[in-house]
Length: 297
Image (cartoon, rainbow, N blue to C red; front, side, top):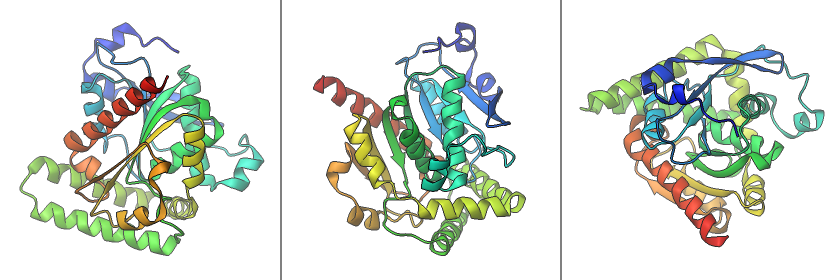
């Protein structure tokens, strides 16, 4: 595993967060973030996979929570459209939607560039699909995983159904923005909505392709494979999430598919709106998964 540069460790969060490193991925370039505190809780980094249309700026406060919990964090900005698919295995192209497969391949390329042997992963929404496929391609890279507001666990879906629920979720975010008295929460909600609209307007074709990809992926088989490989998996799902409703999820999955399932109050983007509570819960779940694994060895 790559030794994290000690000079970098001494820099504060804002300096590290602002820095990006361009890495080569499939004939294109993607900006990567790699940050860590002075004292690391574990040498195993957290690979963060944000949800659909979410930049790292959207997840800045969530990343800061991981940083303050003494975890090194790796993440990528959104992949560019000119990232080539030529080097991706044809078998994988037949198995998975290309837009999601491109994102998963980019995550694995980041780990290769950083010489990372193994990671814990925290994934939100579409990021769950990206991590699930990355695991399917190279399962040995993953130790424990926390899925937040996961797609692919609510049964058969459709593009139109998913697009409608995303739109409804954005409306709920706007309503929450209007009613909230918490200025920090209002700022976070505004950033989420602004970034989503900006992404759709800038890349309408890609937005549609990604939503189609999300609607087509079911990850139950991946969960079974994770269990077989000894990868700990926990899920955080919001009771008010209209994008991937928890009641449908509970009807479609069984307890033995996870090592932990936590239902929380909140909407689809609650991890972004209230990271102090929800990202802290994700870190606690990672700790519990590792403790459980150690007790079994």
